Length: 462
Image 1 (cartoon, rainbow, N blue to C red):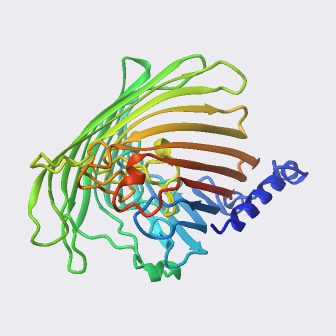
Image 2: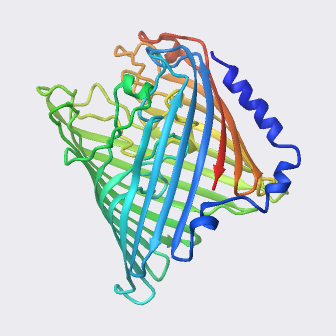
Image 3: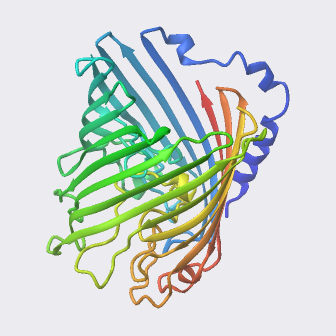
């Protein structure tokens, strides 16, 4: 592995946490808001530098060890004109030190892109006293509920943008309702040669890919608990230059959770079912089959009343795989969800685990000794839900089912520290994927050694 970037980053990280710089800058951090902003005009930005690397590939092809240097710049601005707000986000995501074997994708590269460009109409309490309603049109991002099915990633180098319309309502009793109809941004360019050169091409949207739905949440049971109900639709069709699986999916789901608190137990349970139809492959002549898939997520935790606020949680997940004995397609589709919180870092280099054909049981330990420092360590054991289907995000499959169903054990850790509060933050972490019998014995495995991944992030907020 090209480890020199990681080692250099670790050396910089150690040096950055000491010395007078942090104390001198703590109360005088520069910002776009201080320079250009006003009560009506809000502006902020961030710049992230990432050094990451891995060895022991979990994929069926490509590099068995690699490293990557990536940069992400975000500029957010919004002007409040009274009844209307005009906003936007400029995103510039680039990656370097890659070659033709690097598993590089649009998850890392999307240069000079207008991720958001929207107008929001504030309709006030026209729906009743104590309520508020907003209508948004244009390009925007969305984070709904647990973010498992609809969100904009934070760890990944590029975001999920949607072009369309969205209505947001808040009730007098803390209820929330969102309805939307969008054309998801399809990140461009996508050719490997163009990504390697960090070329710029405007993302496209079109009626060949549509994402729509509604989301509702309300307090329930007690003041710490919330219930969420949602219904998402995804419609995908071929276009002249790209064949697809022609997904037409309907995903109803529900979630109940409680807030975390010192000296208290907390919980979360979520389930979703997926129906509709899909092609058996992207070939135009491939038959369309019905979909019947599901996912379940559960977590129970407790936060101890000590100075470092430790929290211990037990977690479990199931996402169905395709059953060869069923005439339906059973592999769950994660739509536009994120997976960082449950299954570790997800980037072009890493991210073997996902909400597809997986059964998971794990434990997580979190701590936060101060406003400047927090971290966690987690351990998961994962199995295939269906032995003959492709495992999670690995692309590894044994159609005969003879490689068993035990995928791996994964241990992950992360530590974040504000070197200069609200200005400069360091995030360092990594994961070890201890491969089980499936990832060692399946016929298209290219590397049976365990996977080791590490990263160092530096965030500048301005």
